[in-house]
Amino acid sequence: MPVQKLYAGTKLRDTRTRLGLTQKDFAAKLGVSLPYLNQMENNRRPVSTGVVLALAHEFDFDVTELSTGDTARMVTDMREVLADPIFADSPPPLTDLELAASNAPALARAFIQLHRAYTQSYERLASLDDVIGRSGAAAAQSPWEEVRDFFHYCDNYIDAIDRAAEVFARTSGLNGKNPRDGIARYLSDKGVSTHLSDTVDMRDFNSETKVLRISSRASAATQLFQMAHQCALLEFSDLLEVTLDMAGFRTPEARDICKIGLANYFAGAALLPYGAFLQAARDTRHDLERLADMFGASIEQVAHRMSTLQRPGAKGIPFFFVRVDQSGTITKRHSATRLQFARFGGACPLWNVHRAFETPGRFLRQLAETPDGVRYFCLARDVSKSAGSFNAPVRRFAIGLGCEVRHAKALVYCDNLDPENDGVYQPIGISCRICERVNCHQRSVPPLKRPLTVDHDRRGILPYSIG
Image 1: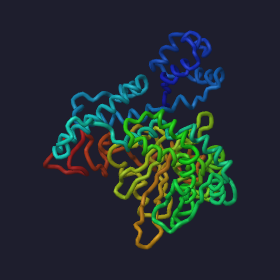
Image 2 (image 1 turned 90 degrees about the vertical axis):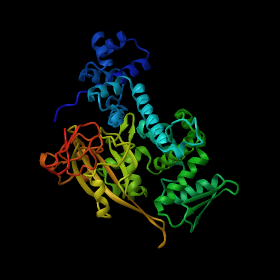
Image 3 (image 1 turned 60 degrees about the horizontal axis):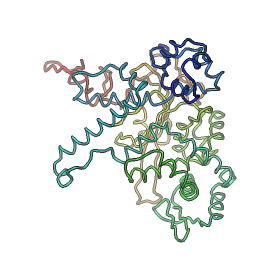
Image 4 (image 1 turned 90 degrees about the horizontal axis):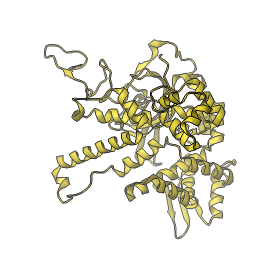
């Protein structure tokens, strides 16, 4: 596999600016010439090993920060945008997209937002019934999409909230033998009484009577999570509001939705406090079941938390996490890896997360390779969510968790696999509409930016061939 060169010009410029150094002074401390630094900052040369070591030695810099950020996400998003037929005549090469995402991330993000506005305007015009009476309505990103992108581009890690939740875990009784009683006492000290009730609603708080009702039908992990969520709203509202102010959402609806997301983030970080969870994950070799038992959490909560372990200076393995429903629609997604999920449509049908519904209660393992040649270990499992009664509907999802195969030795699930065998890797993609593979037997739609040839006298796996 070819060695990936490290281009991190934007990170270098940001670091130099934050330190208040000129290019000349920065170059001297890094032990390189001024022209060489200028070329690295403009991504005309990769960051050398010597520069990486100098950054760590001179500035105590977390060098893993150089390989993270928005670049991979924005490249994937721009590739999806450019798959639109309106760009069919002159699609830019991948190298141009990577340069734009690295050197001009604000411009790349503006381009994505502009296409979103165009698409939504087009859809409004295509349905005149929806447009009548709403002349002048601005084509805007939906509140849900706006919140999704907020978490997506902050790496699904909110440092201030994560650290506050870690402190809360130590002071609220969550670390005790009976964490539910501990957090109930914490709430009681704040004037809130907690009761288990036989209701469909998982959580119901009356702000006038200060009574919090938690569904007795929910699992113990869900009950604890909902109690921690309410603590976030009651005791850490100022912190949530400050974070929302910094996000700068365009609509009140997006702000309201994100506040729920931030309270959920706090609850997950409190139940699975960063330092303790990171150490336990390493000690158990990332065994989801053991970790769920140790922290009184669900499998899904543990898997999701693993994908958020991106604290500067104390990073865990870069994981991707995704949750899909039975139709294949992605309902949760996050990736700290180079693999980025499609913004539109479902996930690749060759990915093992879709087969998890066929084997309830079992973990499925897969070694997979994406079209760019990067290899991953993928773990999938179904998660059923019952409402606690015979007549209540069961919500079924499947979750996927994975990382680059170079981390295989740190995962218990990779035991007895053979990552060195090229023949065991399943070719997967991101989404059919942007996938480059020409011979995939599971392709659902042709790639939008590739020409097609239809031969009426010949039929292969697909009714067309991809140019």
